[in-house]
Image 1: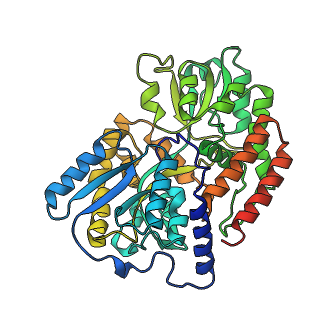
Image 2: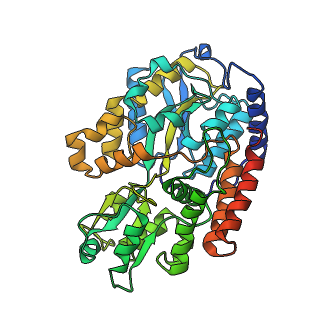
Image 3: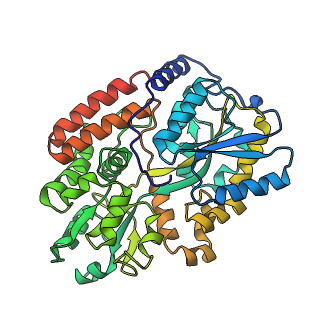
Length: 431
């Protein structure tokens, strides 16, 4: 996943209703599964790829390579808005119109269930992809009802950014592995200008990510493997209490209630945070000389948890084929092209975006350029998805509303979790 920049809480109401109906139909015995069969992957010729804005230009370069090799099956990139909300809205509208304008879709990993349940994407042949070479958590995000509907394209997981100079000042040789170790380290640093911890706590998708990480890192689950919510539990309370008490005690600065990725990054770079939960993209930016005051003074580690290393939230994008697109055989080959080792290596070198191929994280040349790769791989292997549900837009909104109320103090954590459980139960009962 690229850094989350906007809320995903504004779900497309009609899409949510359609998802609910489709999911109900599947649950009633539709054995073919959503999205039809892999026999539908026929036809060769020009196709399109719909995804967010290609900010690096590297994707277009890779498309140009494909087009040079396949002059009769050229790919045209359709750039959707940078923000996830805008991308999802246009893809949903295209699918509801049964338009063939989009052939290959770059889906946020949390959209697979909805798009598959609605039969907006086509089931893919698992035997044509070496899924065993990919990081296992990424493969799960591309499946729905144990069938493959997409191919992992890019991935992401949260890391703990920390100040190495302050860690030394605290008399510690290694970063904390637990929440208590982290707060203890903060208490040893007497600098009024530095807060202990930061993350993404504004009422948007980043809050769902941070809340999910806190719950999972305390040994709980937000939604279990059967699709049932389970947040009114001691483990979920421990996770939410950790964040709420952080605000109450001042270890998390009050200003962090407005933090998205970029606000958090800037606060860390100006020296205002000892520890920060952030996506890997910050590494290169914080090491650039200029505005950053922490160049050469920070490192990354796995996120801490209640009793040991935590469970970061999995991000990323998967490639799927629209059920309404033409030339699906070409689309299938193009997905294989974009996700092969050569293209994943090129993309990492050009953009710093995390690959899904496991072997690249162990490559000595790549580790030299990106020294955080071993830590990122460890975090990815421990990563957990956000709730795998059909009505994701409604679910994430319910999580954000109640988690934000607890962090801002308008609800107790007990009340917030009870209300969240009730709303999520309502939203997932027919899934």
